[in-house]
Length: 289
Image (cartoon, rainbow, N blue to C red; front, side, top):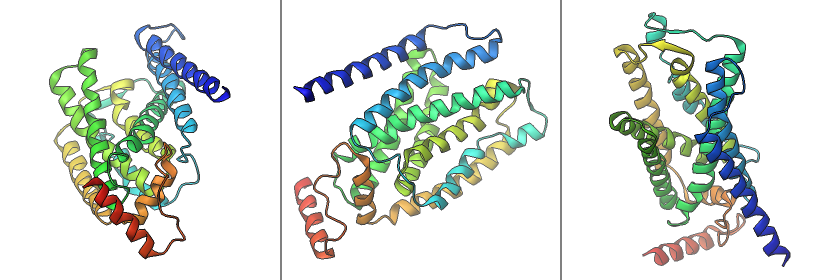
C-alpha cells in the first residue's frame, strides 16, 4: 500500500509540474516592465517547471548521472563547439551588434540558457538515452547504436516547432544541427557520466548562438563565420566519432550502471574475470539475434 501511495504521489507531482509547464508556455505573464527582459523570463519559466519534473523522474528511477564526473578533458572539444557557436567574424566585422547589454539582461539570458540545457539534457540524455539503450545490447555496439539513435531522435524532436508556427526551411535546418549538438552532448554523457556537464555544454552553446537574436541584431552568419564554424565543427566531429568508434564493452557497462531505469540489472560485476564478462556478452548477442 505504501508503494502504491508513493507512486500516486510521484505521478501527481509530475503531472502538476507538466501542467504548470504547459500553462507557462502558452500564457504570457508580466514579471517586469522591460519588454525584452519580460520575454526572456516568460520563456524561462516553463523550462524551469519542465526541468524540475525530469530531474525528479531521474532521481526516482535511481539515476546516478548527478554524481562525480570523470574524463573532464573530454569537455574541451565540447566547449570549443559551444563557444564557436558565437558569430565572432560577423560581430567583429561590425555586421551584428548587441543592444541590450545591462548586467540584468545577460544574467536573465544566461539563466534562460541554463534552463534550456537542464530541461533538454535531463529529458534527452537523462531519460531518453537509457530508454533507447534498453533496445540494444549492453555492450560497445549497443552503446554506439544508442549514441546515433538518441542523437537523431533529439534532432527530430525539433519538428515540433512546426506546430508552433515555425517555417519549414528553418525547422529542417534546426533538425540538422540539433542532431549534431545532440551527438556532442551524448558524447559528453558517455565520457563524463554526468548529465549536469551535458547541460552546461548545451547552455554555453545556446548562450553563444542565441545571444544576437535575443540581445542584439544584424547579420549573424556571413561567409567567414560559416567557414570558421564549419572547419572547427568538422575537426571536432572527426575526433568525437573516432572516440565513439574506440569504445569498449567496459565503457558501456560503466555508463549503464549509472543511467538508472533498471539498466544496471544483469551487468557483469567489475571484479568478474574477462572470461565471465565475455560469456555475458555472447549471451546478450544471442538474445538480440
